[in-house]
Length: 262
Image 1: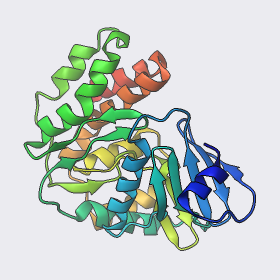
Image 2: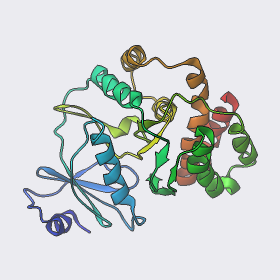
Image 3: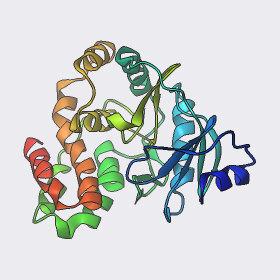
Image 4: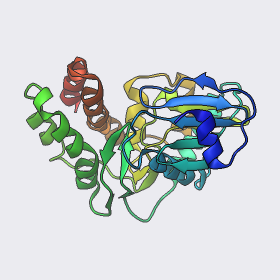
């Protein structure tokens, strides 16, 4: 569906022509006046409602996100956040406050990493929760492409992962999902669930883009224990399996390095 038709369906008035924005590998994204309109070619059922739930969940926990104006299976309409200056110290405060929050239990509604569907799950011991909800679906989907690495991935989660307590997570926190708005840092495109903050930290470290000053301030506000640092490669395996699934065997080298560092 084109952006103007989607706005009309949402009952919102278009102000100005659609201007394409960068939308990554999944969605087509336009700015139309004060709105951002997202659509995708044959999106999997539930993709945009899951993104809207994640944005609202983060907003309810004090994180700046674009407001959700309308959501349907066809797409999503958000508020446009005017760009502002990079403020990494403020972002460190936002994420440290988010990760310090404690929820009643580990919990995930059915959702997505990219367009890959992930099951819902609630409660239980953290290592089993993370492995069964996040890793095993991707491991099954990529097993034939892993060139013998599958059993090594399985073995990683026979040892317990460190548990600081259930915290709300963005779930796909690479640099491209951080937006520095005029009002301050905002987060985009979440794969929200309640887990251990190491999941977010691992993705932030995997491809870089977060400068030293961010890590200095975050570490002062919420120090990262050594056992969490050591666990980051096991969390990165989750994201690297997703990259093998979406982009192919070119990520097997990075996957092997993460396994070796675990």
